Image 1 (cartoon, rainbow, N blue to C red):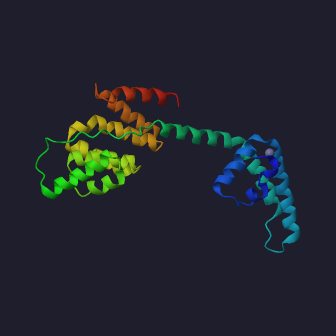
Image 2 (image 1 turned 30 degrees about the vertical axis):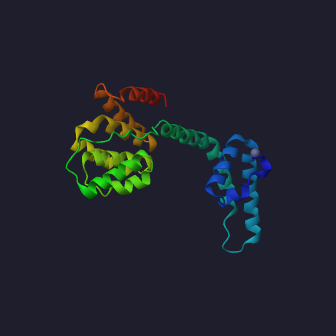
Image 3 (image 1 turned 90 degrees about the horizontal axis):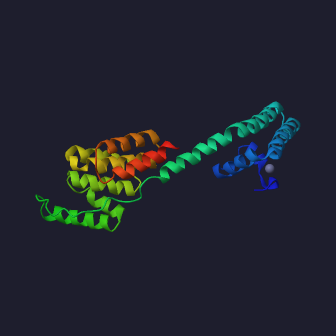
Length: 228
Ligand SMILES: [Zn+2]
């Protein structure tokens, strides 16, 4: 965006959408000329209002003050705010995009007829990464530990994190075999949702579980999170 293209007046009047506002802010932050222009425009706008409005006019000093204030605030805080929003994006980018591999549960018995059919459809959809469809089948099944766990991973892949967290907790409560991988997905949910400290806690818990398939990945993530 060149200086002439920056819609300062609209910005000052609060008429821009959020992405345009972001562009203007990022430009003003690096451009002393436009910060000065903004202050001048604020002053001129104030004069214009003084001359053209009757009783319900907004006082001139308000525009001058607003222009000055915006210019100063942007120069001071925009770099900090902008940097922290980039940092949080980086946290989400560390999170896993992979679903837990499906191992067919041949040894599980006790289900019959329709339930077996629904279970097969659910896992077929899960394996084919048709997560929306899988989710619709999973909710029709009785909440066993296995169903809850795979359903939680399905929610994770669909970016439905509150449901994923809740079902992970229930699956682990019913069957401790899901504990380490449960912690792995829990940590990744916190990474995805920019919650660094809870993510670190879940990763440390995972490491503390001793040797397991996700331990090495957890250690690597903890190291990366340290430097952010
Ligand atoms: Zn400029």
